Length: 253
Image (cartoon, rainbow, N blue to C red; front, side, top):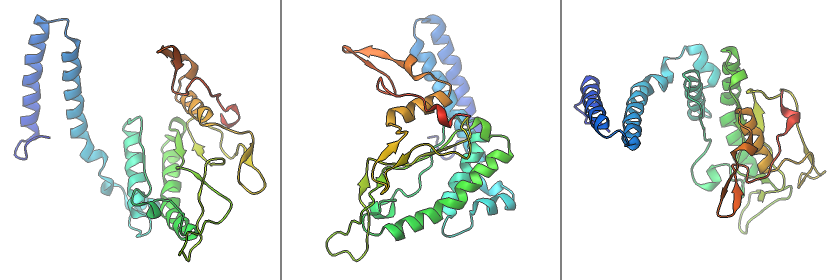
């Protein structure tokens, strides 16, 4: 972090001086690749620092766009601002953006053990309009075809009521056997669903997709063949999909 009284010009001058000194040192010690990497990281940090204020300034958006996302609405404003900043980052070439809804203590972070209806109604209201706006905005700007949007959470929910002792509200416990994730854009097929659960929503039974399959599909959509990322360490193979997984072809455009 730079000193409070240091101007952009001062910081740029400091970095230029360090760059000249580092280049001179590297000419004398050409076998020091870590120095070049460190210099590049400083330069990248500076460029990010200079670009961030403009990229994150959602207030500069037209009123129609802010209204589309719902930035001034009490029930969804904070998440709406996240979604709008995400679009601004994507259009500036940022390759990975992650958004969170919630993030506080359990019962106020999508964890519906005690009051499923109240909890999910609140968070659905918080995310519904901003997410729809993000998808529409990406599409109207021609960015959705090259941007993969993934929505997911922590767990599914059991199809039976959970009522802890002393609670007057009904919740539901975690369900690791059935779970929903949706993809949009980025080479996926729109308007389809893949897989289904049993008749009570307890276990996935048709076209089951494992975590390995999910990761293999994401990597494929990002242009990477997951099996080619395999490497051997301590006598066993490793890769991002843990030497398993298949690409779910049915959801690809």
